[in-house]
Length: 310
Ligand SMILES: [Zn+2]
Image (cartoon, rainbow, N blue to C red; front, side, top):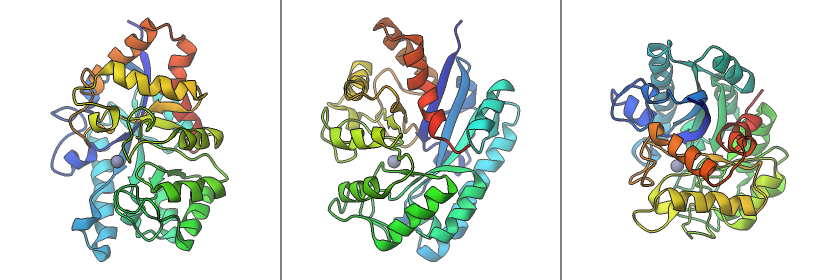
């Protein structure tokens, strides 16, 4: 059977690992023993927790605990997967027949919104950092609580330092004002790791057509999310997911769309795309719609590979 290339830019599977779950197998939507249909296979794992429940002084230790959990789980799964720090190591993992695991940080507050802490994030091999999650922080407002609040001076300093280190700014969850402040100052590609089209479903977490065009113009990528709340009416299935994809393609998004499932961070998910093992259905559905192999490889793998650190 044909092996499918696969790159998912966002999942929250580490939330389960920190409670004792395994990356190898088990109830999580992303489990390495269900990735056999894919080669190459790359998954970005978000370091994430809700900062409402962790006071600022405890966050360095808490973030390190999640990072340790990620490394420990990968060690346990060393026969199947390897931590990757960028494009070259993803390709080496593929050659070795292993899953490529990558890191992101979902909410800069996990590292104190501190530009100086980005050196550590870079040393960990972090690819993307969400400037905010659903709470405003010292860098910017969020789409959920303060859409009109843009980047602060500290936010701008954070962006400049992240860009210097090659870490991509992730605008999923960011306020609309913060988005445009970033788009104006960014000198590197900006990404939206897990967001859909607001034109099709006007949820605050989705991107307007102008926002999508700005991400694409920066050379960045938008990862499509399987969360039903971001797709449409309850019960939304694969045809709705494809409608979001095709809307972005109509905006000229061939090089700017990918997958960002949000698996293990949202429920309910798109009917028919319940876990990583179901994702070949999407490939088959798009092939049946006449998508070329070249376009499918871009959407499923190559667009995200392009924006990684070297
Ligand atoms: Zn998220």
